[in-house]
Amino acid sequence: MSGRDPQAGFSMIEALIAMAVLAVGAVSLLGATEGHSARIGDLTDRTVARWVAEERLTAWRLGLPEIDETHTRAEVEMFGRAWRVTVEATPTTDAALDRLEIRVAPAEADGANVRLTGYIDTARDG
View (tube, one colour):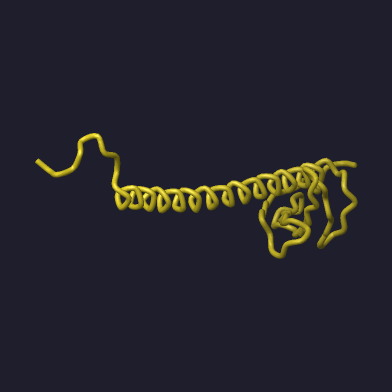
């Protein structure tokens, strides 16, 4: 039998080791949660950018925006945030179709979060 009283609690060293193990686990959990939150934020940005691109493509198909024949840049607001939209229209081998490449990014960022390609009917009446 050991010389320790069965009613005694943890020794100071045991308590310190247990707290150190809990601290390491808490730091790891906090880091994982922070990384997950950042990925969710990026996913939200990409989703809204995709909606902006799809909205722009639909508007072009309906003939709503004033467009020129080459490049169009616009700033659109959706969900309280400004988005930079760049649209490039290029002809295809079919004279009745134009290819649109729509790139969307937050107004303050470089590059594109989303790139969407679509086709519009250029032969329709009015």
